[in-house]
Structure formats: structure tokens, C-alpha cells
Length: 319
Image 1 (cartoon, rainbow, N blue to C red):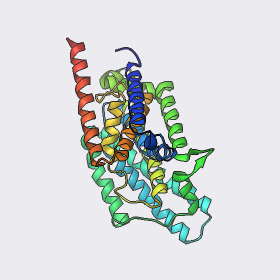
Image 2 (cartoon, rainbow, N blue to C red):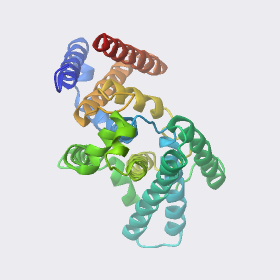
Image 3 (cartoon, rainbow, N blue to C red):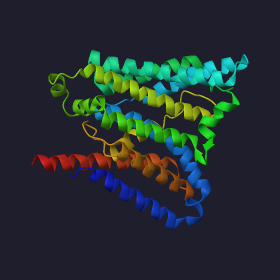
């Protein structure tokens, strides 16, 4: 398969789906309201998908992505609500809250990275275990309730615009660019691909695989915290189950975007297009009044279909 052919195919699929929905329902799909709605919903999903993509590039996975993000959100929301009641300066409160969320989620990433790299546990089992741990801590802190009472200025992160462009979309664009630069233009990014292709060979070539994996899960946790901050701002609250539906969708979007589930290949551009495809499909379901639960079914079918095609392609190459 030629370089970037997967991304070109995805771009064609995106164009076809967009044109089809525009033709079937131009009075609803091509409205400012619908485009604006998608622009506010897509970023949190897109950022979580990029956060999932990076571990998958190494041949691993991060099943604790959402619970680590929500734990960071719960801790951040608790601090923010407490300081707001004490009449602290709003700007300072928001800065502390953002930093707290990032630190908490990155710490979760460090735990994941340590268990996967230094202890040597399989990524799927390790992050499944830490997912339960993080969720339990989040439930203990929040008592299973929503946490609210944030400064009004905090709402701008998830609901504001700059020159008509939603702030979440700007954040997503910056995250996509930074992730692309890290993976494509840095030594660390190239080492991530090398680990995904062959971990033993990467180790024998002198790479510190454990350190690379640690940074992978730390970065995944960091991106998760950004997505959760956007969700907290949009919903004006924090809760342990926020974003739970995004976990498998993030895996599906990563694989649909061309990221090999076995590691070693994946492009940020492909993942971004895949996220856009799934978002407009979800929007189409809403427009035509279809059950939103079918979106999960469609994502499952897409994931199985792409995995099957990848398997058949690899089988054909090996013959």
C-alpha cells in the first residue's frame, strides 16, 4: 500500500458522507446551528482519540484513558469549587484548576507507564486494572455525585469562540499539530514507531524502551486531561462517568484512521479525518431521528470491519 493511501481513502470517504448528508437533508445538516454543534462536540472526542492513538502506536492500548481523565477532572473540580467559595480571584482559580487536572491525569499516566514498562504487564490488562483503580478513587472523592460551582469565566473554555471559531476546536487543532510534530519531527516520535514495529529490536538498537513507554502514557494522560477540561466547561460540572462512551469510540476512530492495532503505523491526519467521519455520522443520526444507541453499533461494526480488512491485507502480503 502506497504511503498516505489510507489517509487519501479516508478523505474521500469523508467527502462522500458529507455530500450525501448535505444532499439528503440540506435544510438541517448544512445549517449554521448543526455545523456549530459539531464544532463544539468533535474536539473532546478528537483529543481523546489522539490520546488513544499514541499508546496504540507502540502496540499497546490505554483502557484507563477516560477514568484517568475523569479522576483529574474530579480532583480539579473539587479544588476549583472550594477556592471559588472562598472568593479567590477567578483567573487564579482557573489556572490552579487546569494545572491540578493535568498533574492528576499525568500522574495516572506515570502509573500506567510504570506498570506497562518496568513491571512488564500487558498494556490491556494493566490499564484495565488501573482503570478500576482510578474510577474507584474518583468515586470516593466525589461520592458518586456531580461537582459544580465553577467561576463563570471557566465556561469560556468549552463554550466560547474566538473570531467565530469555537475555543474547543482551536484547542483540538493545536493538540493535533503538536502531536503531529512530536510523532513526525522528533526523535521520541520516531522511537515510538520503532517500539511499535519491534520492541526487542528497538531495545537492541540502544533505545531506552521503558522511558519511551513512560512518556507515551504520560502524554496520553495529559491529552485526556485537556479533553476532560473541555467537557467540564461545557457541562459546568464534573462527574466520574463523563466521557465513558468515548473509550471504545476512541479505539474505533484510531483504527479507522489507519493506526495499526499491532503498532508501528499511524498518522495524525488519518485519525483526525476518522474522528470527523464518525462525528458527522452521529450528527446524521440525530438529524434523521435515529436511535443514538445505534451509533455505538455502527462504531463496533466499523472497528470489526477495519480490523478484518487489516488482517486480510497483512495475510495477503505474507503469502
